[in-house]
Length: 105
Image (tube, rainbow, N blue to C red; front, top):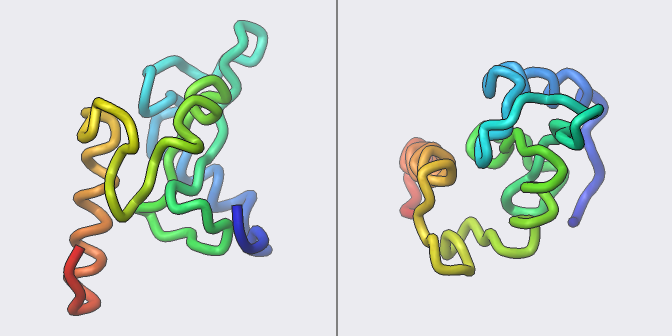
């Protein structure tokens, strides 16, 4: 992962987890550390300084570790479920963001 977390990272992470209703967007498990499901926030592009909404996913630690090396925001997934349901909204947000900047996905 590149970069460093911004000073307001704690507030950003809370916002992302709230947006996901304190559930992992991939497996839908609620934040329940006692049961092995600790909710984290993953930078899909691997850049800690990029805190755009399209780049931040609320994932339990299990899912975070599973997908961390398998997602590439340029190509989508690097494994068979190329456009998994949980990932599609992030790709769509990224495309909308790029469109506002006058760039293509």
